[in-house]
Length: 381
Ligand code: GLA
Image (cartoon, rainbow, N blue to C red; front, side):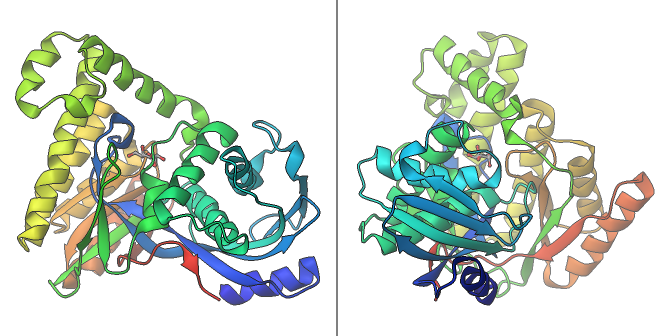
């Protein structure tokens, strides 16, 4: 892929790029829809990544090309960038230029050529990878000296204010900050991070990722409505964020809320607890104990948060029936991907069981792969 981004760059922009930068997609192990509630998350970066070959320009223009697009070269004037002006995939990198300028960083133009392997619309954070690859490239090209968490926050700002998706900070933090061989335990309120070593293979396990190929679209309003519901519930309970409701206070809080908000709150509070339990088990080397937590997390997303769909439910059921220790949908929901924790020799069997269940139900074939925790955004050439 590094080759492709650089070769395309030469063909499109007529010169060698200064370098190539890469940022990964992610799966979230546990902690779903907790990040915009000031809660905990535990994502890990995938080996799948977006790569960008890049070079500075000094005429205030941004010229973008993507191997995944139709061959068009985008040509944007930096001083004309404003929310709503750029549409499609180019809005993500353009939003990063805009967010850097808004934060007062002196960034001129650039020539960029993107290539990548992160499936889009699969709940694996291809957007965050696109943003973070751009951010890390500009950070180097313009010597901005920004840290990985600072780049993640700018990438999130780009997505929230320029693209218009009210996402939390998990995906950008995962793409910018993850390290090889570790999951990222992040407190989304304090932004305190801990890299939790996760060598599943050494412990005799595998993490199977199953892309159901049902496309989700976080921009369709459902995500924003969930976020607004959580914020309304926190307000009714007199809390800054649902993070501030301890599990012991849950029963009393639920009685004070209408049903539709009560189930959102139950998910967030129990999900935060599942993250801290997972961390305790990982610290204690008890990987198998993660299985039931994953499956309980899925039930909560399905029954309380209601962001699951037939395909993700079926993938979880089929994986567990075929011997997975646990499984859950990962990411925002409404389709996307499922993760399954399996014994080392069970990955093929579980993947085949899910494929066969999909065939019987008349769904398109899902795509399965095993994931290892991979490095975050960085220069690769
Ligand atoms: C999407 C958002 C994240 C997070 C997840 C749900 O991936 O981008 O910020 O809210 O959904 O956990």
